[in-house]
Image 1 (cartoon, rainbow, N blue to C red):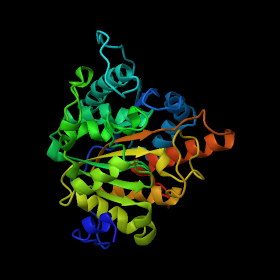
Image 2 (image 1 turned 30 degrees about the vertical axis):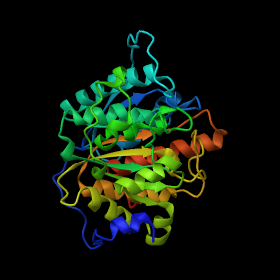
Image 3 (image 1 turned 90 degrees about the horizontal axis):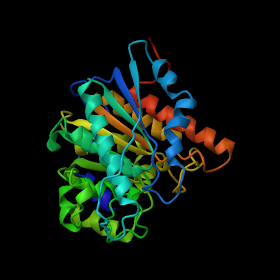
Image 4 (image 1 turned 45 degrees about the horizontal axis):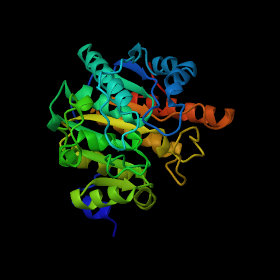
Length: 338
């Protein structure tokens, strides 16, 4: 029996009813681009936000319903902090990652205060540090739960990462259980590691580092890997994941969606693809159910890299990414009604 089933057997699965919660203001959307790739080892995710815009993402969101109001807040820009030459072991481009995420957190906070739901377009997955930090400025840690859709756990620290690339570390920088595993990082003092791992659930895992596997066991991390999805089906997995982190349906939900959670057949234009992943149909069902839950309050879509693959790869990846964002907002494969 896998760890995930040991954890999830205590969560009842009821397919006859969806989670009920107060509806967040998803009819007012704020799109924010983060053209940033310095948290990754492969250059090119800085081109993702503009590629998604040019592929028609904002128009497709508007076509979901005439009631949806979309505002494009443009792209995040940042200036490096004065670090006085300080260096932290095995954190590549730390100054850029820290400065970009601080500027991002400010912008996400602004979008929420404008009474809009922020949808952050990356950029590498290191930007989740800033997007989630921005959300946390407007709510309490106990009121926020995180659905992390990814082939990877992203729970490394600077002492455990095999690469030093910070797109493999954002989750660990956000949780209090791992605070003592990090050195003091002056550039990231603004990032409050206040979330609990109990409020996270991962879906789509299939590429996990040695240290991360130990953390999964030590902290009883909630997750569904691809074997669980094969065995249970995406319907049961989605229902159980949402109930695990939001049992009463009264918490805000942030979805951090890495495009590499999909099988490369559907999204090959990404820096760290992993085979045997989620199908586009499974991802659309997942995000449709997230929308139906009424709890989605913010979202990241990351790791789209238009410099990877040929024209067909890029087109497929952009189309998959657009469909996933639209499903989260309320697009219906049976047809939208305006």
